[in-house]
Image 1 (cartoon, rainbow, N blue to C red):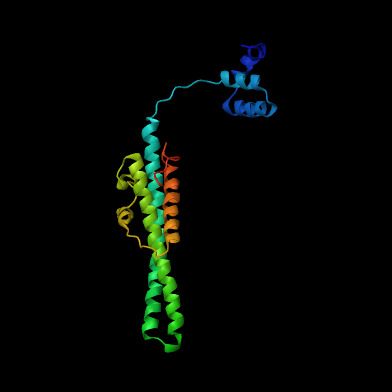
Image 2: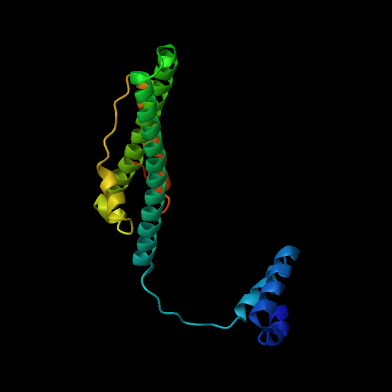
Length: 197
């Protein structure tokens, strides 16, 4: 123990936690490693009992993954329902509306249907990411969503639409990878591991 630490140790024994923290910050700012060591070596010691971090970290990850999946897919479904409602209205107007507006309405309907397909594929992509992460962590996909509603778990079976364009297929694959990485970031030791080629 250095002379400085020995000299000031008696003073530091009497410090409260807030005072100790302020002195530690001050020592860090000054680059005074010797005083910083004295501050920490004289801090009170406590023994804690806690649940094994292995299980609590994974329980927390399941909770976070469940909530994020549920909220994200819930929002996508809400938007999809709105688009389906609009598509129904436009289809009615195309079928029974004014002849002069049919071509314009048909084009709008085509765009809306493409947006519905996009929403279906996004729901599929986020569900595929859950399935892939489940393989990585050796759980069933529904286990990763243990804290989600039953309707959210049912979305794991969402069907995707095939794209005519290979570029769109690549984008969809990239989306799965992106969602996988986002979910894997919650899981201990899985954040840097991707099973996608």
